[in-house]
Length: 337
Image (cartoon, rainbow, N blue to C red; front, top):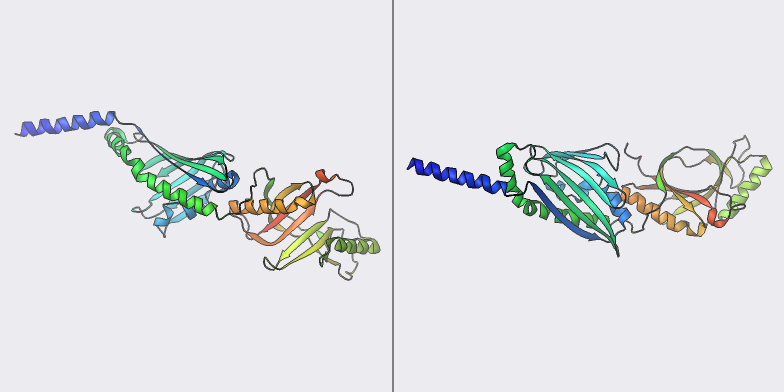
């Protein structure tokens, strides 16, 4: 009886081993979704981890999870680590290993006690927005030992069922989150963060006529022999989105001349700001503001109380198509290092 049982167990074990060797050594999960936003917005969100907790299907399961960002804010080397309830999300980290603008973000995923995998987001431009494809690929036998590798092959049969529903939930969360962002397509926008140093200026409120404000400053400079030290600036100060003040500013070499009338001494806006380079007619500046606002939102930056234009070119001796203007939005808070 014992001998028969032993043979039966051995036969089952042999079948188990033989069956395992017929199974794949890798697991692949793949899901996709369409998002009604330009590829630039989608790529920017996926190329950094700041927003990941907002749409991830796993982070919402553990309200007490702790996470930490390190490395650069975006692109290769950006890293997210988390430490959560092992019954819910566990402990692990992700790091971006490949980043192709507006097309691909690939990351290494390491889960404590569970091994590692590679995840990737590929982005495709479609009519009305973007298509995002999210993939998961794992080597089922690497580092598992002989018997562990056999078991992992069988577990691989269920990966699509286990992870696929999470991918679907996550992509729907990503779609919902990204579609709250401004819809302007900022692809090709020359934009970035800069820390602006203050300079001495003469400024005057526009009272609805910016040209008149500049003329008042020019007259004050001529009357007092004050030299210009840079190109003009136009500053908008927001009380709220419905109330704002527009003023003209001209960088100058400061003197002891007392301020007079509407013209006052001051300093130009300073601190951290998002800056875009606008080329061409001033009539097209509103579109650049919209693109810069969309760029900021996708990068997770909030606007402060100031925006301004720095007129790099002199329209008196520059063709309209060659005009260069720097557009700024003050940051509400300094950027993460």
